[in-house]
Image (cartoon, rainbow, N blue to C red):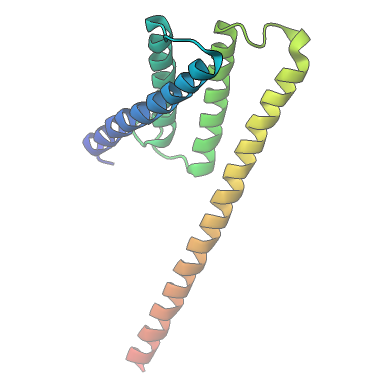
Length: 153
């Protein structure tokens, strides 16, 4: 494995992911501000947005680049990512006062249901993608073997 190449990929993903996430959530904050009639967005709120989104992107980059986790496949990486991002989101929700205690059981159930649903959707999408790639590879291998047989005869 080329560590220098993986480090470059890690930082490119970190930069691009942070730009995308911060921009997306800034747009959402602007929409909420317009709807609620708020004229300003505080610097503290913007700082929290940047820091929290950077943390989420960092979790993604650690899980899906080969810089830290070298030998896992996609399913294991997805599982690690989903567990880490779930704990990270729980920390965030506690910090903003959402999901305060066990009395919010229906909210907790909804949150975990959404997480599990998204996880299984990712697995189904990956399964269908992998199946297509398997079929293409098998077809190409059979074609190659047929060509080799005709040449050797």
